Length: 193
Image (cartoon, rainbow, N blue to C red):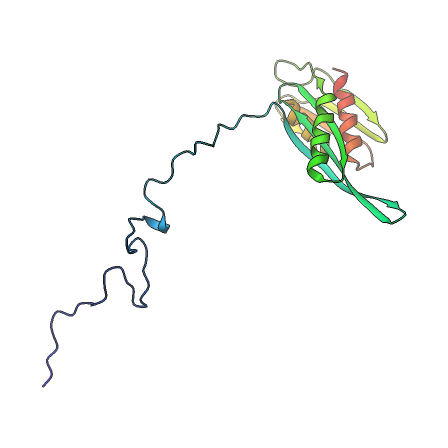
């Protein structure tokens, strides 16, 4: 007759699962918490500095790869259109071309800073009256729209946001989809302020 012990306990060492591996925080020699991290974490590095907010916000509205045919084949470069503004009434459009995207973006940002316009806005950060302008085949109309926010699309919206303009209704009256021409038409309209 076989007798079974009443107290059946698992004889595996603490922290082991049935397959023999270690789970969770019960690793040998480890006072690690969940996900194997040391408690307390790592403090701020002596190399990390407070990130300084840039003077101008920027947004790319188009990036194109353009090819130039030369004797040996094709040469590729990048053309970047960028809008920069401080959201307080200053905005500019820049164009940069280079063989590398990061270099083209830097050139476009410098061009935008050079071509900044200062806008005279109303107390509610809107425009005082209706404006319209044309650049190339792009025609843009801007109207004040009290309490409606920015009602605009394409590059016009980006320019108005980065300039800090509010409550404006904009319309692009052209079949052109060229964002650079639309952006420059918008800047021409805002220059009338």
